[in-house]
Image 1 (spheres, rainbow, N blue to C red):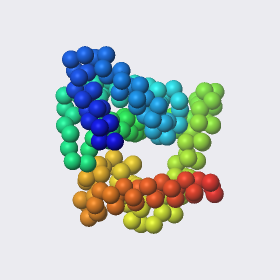
Image 2 (cartoon, helix red, strand yellow; image 1 turned 180 degrees about the vertical axis):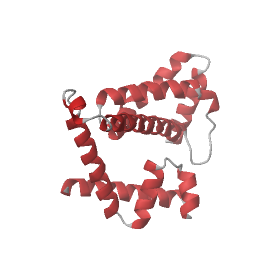
Image 3 (tube, rainbow, N blue to C red; image 1 turned 135 degrees about the vertical axis):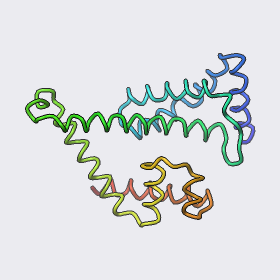
Length: 183
């Protein structure tokens, strides 16, 4: 596995001189990145756009990638995709909120009322699921997914090790999936 991580980082470095090398990383990570982006935006076309933009950002910022303890190319790349997806989601959310300012007769003909209703239902469902989480899990979920804080910042604020923080996020996601089945 360590060889695989080195290989990704070496491919990234080599792609600066030979852009064709970057295609190896695209081929390797495109599907997993699509799943992550889709998990945030729930739209396959938007997920594809997000992943494409993320790969472009990774390539443009390849010289900025520095191997750090506990942070491989893979973790850096996933963070780029997740940040891009969350930013895209927030943009969509702002656009939806603008529609709510219109009078109902303006947007009824646009067919947007169902979309807004669905978005509101989803938000209320997410808030209910967050409310059901134990306080320690809720804090880390909100910090990571809503406030967009890094693992390091959350771990420092919560006085946790990175592995404990990751385990709490894993448990919270698992619990929320179980909540979703009962909603």
